Length: 263
Image 1 (cartoon, helix red, strand yellow):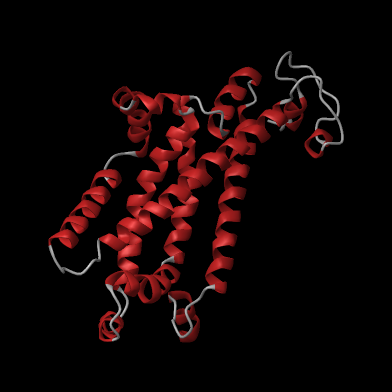
Image 2 (tube, rainbow, N blue to C red):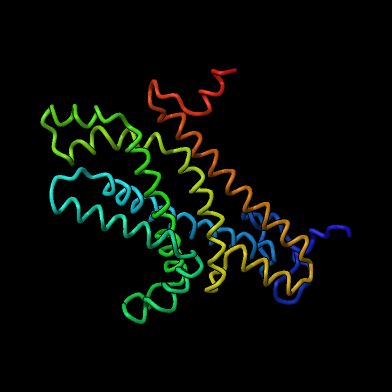
């Protein structure tokens, strides 16, 4: 079957061809009616918004919870914080992300009425952020625990408090070490943003489902959506790789560099 990419230059209202289809993306022309290409680009923007917001929430909460899980046993308060962080991780990583989306959209606003005022993409981003934060927390915890124990002992000998030890010594090292697994989680956030279709956020997956029904050109529609997902994930990968190179710990040998040395 021949591909008909011209389907993207048809009006979403009457199915007729529109003028300035591709040039309208760069502000060089105007469409009287929105085309499927306009709809596709808008859906891509919603995917980026949900994934970006969810990842931001996940990075903040994941770093906090992962750090709390490694607090030294210095008293009752530290034990309470460790248990709370552990409960957070076990709760949110063991519930499917789609179920969490439905909980935030249908259930939780019934108990916390102000949440009803939030748009659906915010609720999806929160659900995605909490789910991903549990996974990032485990990576941050592993990064902290991979550091030599002598660093914490040296900080104690210098008279640094626990907060100062984490702020100036432990976290700057651990966060740079865990960038490779954070890259995978960042890419997963892009892919997991597809669950937003379940609550009618007009992102790529919802666009693909509706556009395929209207045009009966599922091959072209899903091919374009797949390419945009792949392009987005690949861009995130390259950005994280750049951050990893710029923030690499001096003298720290990663798995990739260790393999190259072996050759």
